[in-house]
Image 1 (cartoon, helix red, strand yellow):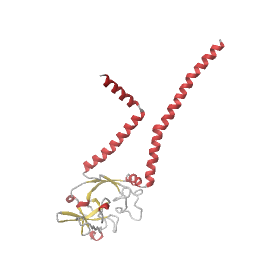
Image 2: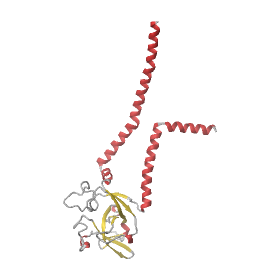
Image 3: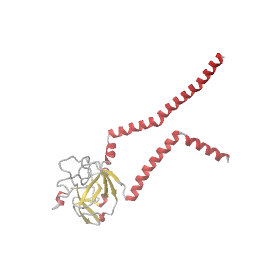
Image 4: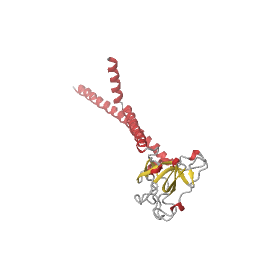
Length: 250
C-alpha cells in the first residue's frame, strides 16, 4: 500500500509540473490531429481524404487569375481550395459531361518514382477494356472551358501516356489503377495553408512560430517566477528593517 501511495503522490507532483502539463497538451493535440487524419482515411475509403488544389487547370473564370480570392464560390475549383475526396468504385464514377464527376488520380509517368504526382480533373468519358475501367479526363479550365465544351469534349481531353506497360493508360485515358477517388466537397482558401507550408518561406514561418511558442511557454514563466521570488524577499526584508529602527528609537 505504501508503494501505491508513493506512486500516486509522485504522479500528483509530476502532474502539477508545468513542463509535464505542456508536454501532455502537445501530445493530446498531436493525437487528435493524427486520429482525425487516419479516421478520415477509414471513413472516406482513401489514402488522401483531403488535398489542396495546387494549379488553376480546373478554374473557369475568364480574364482573371485563378487565385480564389476574388471569386471563391464560382465554379469549379481554384488554386488554394481544400478538396475532400471519397474513394469509390470505378464503375460508379459519373461520366455524363458536363455534370460528370471530378476525380483525383495518380499522374502516369515513365518512372515509378513519379507515380505519386496527383491530378484533379473532370471525367468526360469512360470505357471498359479487358476488365478495367478507363477514364478520359480534362481540366475544366483547359481549352474551351467547362461547361461550354459540349459538342465533342473528347477532342480536347487530356493526352495521357504511360511507358511501363502496366495497363495504366489506354488510348490517352487513365486506368482505374490510378484512381484515388472523386471530389465530394470543396472549401475555399483553406488549402492555401498547406500550399504555403510546402515552400521554404512557409517552413521558416513554422520554425519561428515554434520558437515563439517555446519562449511564451517556458522562458517568460521562468522570468516571472524569478521576479516574483525577488519581490517576496523584499517584502520580507522591509518589516525587519522597520522593526530594528523602532527598537533603536525606544
